[in-house]
Length: 106
Image (cartoon, rainbow, N blue to C red):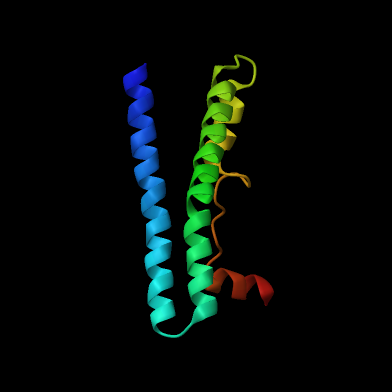
């Protein structure tokens, strides 16, 4: 277990560090062009990037857990799984051709 925790800490730290460093580099480039406000915004964005990335990953995890729980539920699994993959509004609707729309309007 200690190896896995070390792996996660090293990889997570490297990824977060790279995101912060990218923001610092972009900020330095803007500062070199004379855009102090833009430089500050880039640096702040770099600092916020690991938090936003973690939030996206946690939201994805929550969605995976929800879908898995719905699939495992014997009473509602098949119906919920079908709607989860089809999207919030169900299957995509077919568009009417412009010729059909013109003939029905006339």
